[in-house]
Each structure stands twice: as C-alpha cells, then as structure tokens.
Image 1 (cartoon, rainbow over the protein chains, first blue to last red):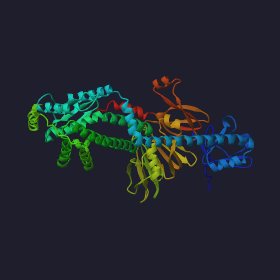
Image 2: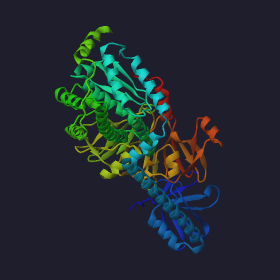
Image 3: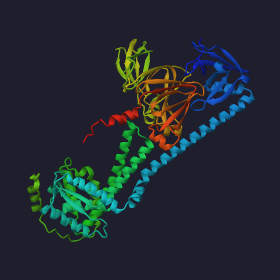
Image 4: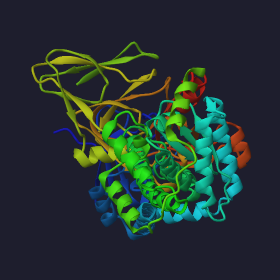
Length: 377
Length: 227
C-alpha cells in the first residue's frame, strides 16, 4: 500500500512548495519517508538533533528542523494527531519549548476569537442601534446643521433645477400660488425660512420641497386640481416638509447609512451590493412614510390655522389616487393609502371648526391661463 | 481527470479530460464547451450555509458548477473571465493553498474549498478582504490570474515583499505580515504602493503581473459617462 503523505519537507533541491513525505513518531525521534519521486531519502532523526517551533500561516503547524547547509531539512507537520503524538513522545526540554509555542497559538486563537466575537457584537449592536435608534441619531445630527447651510444647499439645487425648466414669471397662476403661500406662511410663527415658491411648466402632477424653503409646484398639478384649496393643501404639506427639515433628515440618513454600510460590508459586489441597496431603500422608505404622515398632520393644522378649507388636500389626493394611479407622479413619492386618508380625516375631525376664508381669485380663470401659457417653449 | 492548458498566454483555456463518471468543479460560468457525455450540475460547495458564507464573505460565486461525465468519458473546455495566465497545481493532501477570491477556476473532485477568515489586520489591510479561499484535498487545482502568473519560491525564513493586489495564491506554510511600502506613511501612499505583504518561507507565492484594481481605474477614464 502506498504511503499517504502527512507532512511537507523543505530543503535545497526540493520543490518550493515542499516535497510530500510521511512522518512517523517513535520513542526517540522521527522517521521521515519521502512519498513519490523525490531526491530525499528516508531519514531517522533523534529528538536530540532537532529543533522545534510553531509555524505556518496560522501558527498551527509544527516545524521540525535538523542538519546544516545543503542537508538542512525543515518539515512542516499539520496533522493534529501527529502533532499530539510528537508532543507525547518528545523529551521535556523539547516539549517545554513546544508547550510554550502551543500556548502562544492557543492564546493567539483565543484573542482572535475574542476579537472577532467582539467585532460581531459591535456590528450587531450597530445594526440594532441603526434600526431602532436611527431616527434619534438623525434628528440629533440635523438639529446641529445651521439653517444657513440648509438654505445654501437648497438654493443650489433649486437654481440648478429652475435653470433647466420653464418657470412661470407672472400671470394668474403665479399670483394665486403666491396668495396661498402668503396665507400659509403668515400663520407659521417665528419661521427661520424665507419661503420661495415657483410654478414650473410641466405635465407631471407633482410638487416638491427642497431644504431651506424652496418649493416647486408643477402646472400639471394645478391643472388636475379642482379648486385653489386643493393646491393649497399640497402646498401646506410641502411647506411642512421644509419646516420639519425632512429633506435634511433624509440626506443625513442616506449619507450616514451609505457610510456605515460601506464600512461594515466593504466594497463587495453581487448579493452584497443587492442587500446594501435593498437595505438602503427599505430604510429610506421607512423614514419617508413617517415623514409623510408628519407633514400631512402638520400641513392640515397649518391649513386650518390659515383658514383655508383643510379638506382640499384629502379630496385632491383621494380623487387622483382613484382616477389615475398610474400616471400621477405625486403618488410615487407620496403614496396615498386608505389608512393615510383615514388618519387625515380623523385629524381633521379633531381640529377646531373654523369658517374658511375663500381666496381672492377664481380657480377656473387661473387654470385657463395655464392652458394659454403652455405652448410658449 | 487530466488537464491541459491550451493557448498559453493571455487568453488561455483549459481542456479537462474526464473518465466516465468523473467530475470537475469549476467556477460558475467557466465552461466554454463540453462533450455531449458531460452533464452540468450546479452545486453549492459545502452545503447551503457554506456556499452562502463563501458568497457573502469572500465574494466568490455562490454556486460552483460540477461537470460530470455521466454518460461516458469526455472533455470540457474551461476559461476564466479575465485575460490572464492559468496555472495547474497538484494537491497531494498535505499541501494547501490560500487563494484570493477571484483566483479559483477549477478543481478535481477531491479538491476541498473553504472560506477562511483572516486575522483582523490582514483582513483590513491586505486588500483581499477578510475572507480568502483555503484550498486543500487531493487532485489537480486550476488557478487563473490577471496578466501573467509568476511563481516565487521561498526557502525557510527567506522573505519577499509583494504588493497585495498582485497576490494570487500562497501555500499555508508561508506566513506574511502587512507593512507600509516605505518607512513613512506619506511616502508609502505617494509611492503608489501603499501597503505590501512581507512573505516568509518556506513555500510558494503565486503573483499576477497585473493589478485588477489599477486596471479598473485606468479603464474607467475611457468609459463614456451616461447622461
């Protein structure tokens, strides 16, 4: 039966990766038998003639060396049973050295394990903290960002956006939106923001708010609205995104999440990349929903304070979600669920009844003016 | 299983001869062509968890393909994704290779592949990630590289310094430490080498003559940016 190699021998004239050999332990030393074609010959080495140390990538191999010059041999043993047999048979002066080496390996492994379990613990803690405590962290971070930074940031994006779009400069639509903004912002006490609202030519039924008080209303939204109160409802919702600093919260969340995910997972691809993306999207969706609800409720209160009929917002959202769910962009960022409408209605019922004061403009002429201004491009 | 390298150089291919019922494991997607007697099975080496950990941790493919000569002897042609040389290694049950995550192309049935966790410093600084493949067992192992493969043989206690992104594989009798390329941090970073690995023999280190990361950066400048 051919010998099964259980060790690698290194020496001059042998392959660099080591020559396979079979090592057996006897009472007074080792016997090494080469396996396969080799320039090596069988050698028996007494314990007194060898030196022993721990080696290999993980310091878990037993390295036995003997001889000098070109006949210097180094044998790496990895088989645990063989190493145990060696330690049993070897005399104490050799084993003392070995035990120290083994102890070192054990300690290294122990600290290695300790290190990894603490790293894993910290990671799990971090994930839990991010999942459950992220809102607090984000709020804390956002509270420390000065309003001026926010405005500068918002303005840059705002100007960049407007430069690519057709902005309505004047006309009934602009005056109507200005009147709504005026009525709403009057009722915001101590607002640090100077709100700027632009009406932008575009078929999309949407409006959005940038950090710092920059709001864009698309003509598509105004075309779909049946009254000024409905547009004012959306506007109030958007203004409250600004007041609650939602844009900033989202940015901090995204940036922070990207940084943490990047650090934790490294730059891996494939499944990892997917998980990373999914995780980020899920998280932002979660924050998005909570922010929408907040903006809904505070928006509703603001409408009521400004004595603008507050059911406009609900009516508008409900009507559009029934009619053109597919085409209305507003719902990709502002999903309208039954639960959300219910919450709004409940909140509306709880608000003190105030007689709404109508706007000074008629809605129909405003919409008609939009139709006239369309083919200007 | 018998392997033969066709077209040695930048665009090589491996021809693997299989006896009836013999199998070869290959990186998924590596098969170029095969005899009609060969069946392709997808297999999660090391079970589902093993495959998952390998995928998640070392970035290796989730599945390996297993090509089995189930209907009689035949041959399989295998090729790696990147241009570069292929090296055949013979595993005899005692020698073991640490292989960086993209280095594995194929292995005989008796070849065992595990993901292995590196120490924290090696993982953080080595550029190979925290996990590398530890390949042992018995049979032929086929590794691929980016560029040419260069073999460095180290005698006991002999040292050699390698830029870590050029590493392909090294034997487990070889130890290594991560070091700065120059004595100072600034000099290390500005020299373009950053961190290097100091290997200490005995054993063999296989390195590749091109650095995939640098090549990626270089080629990025020619890719048109989409609007």
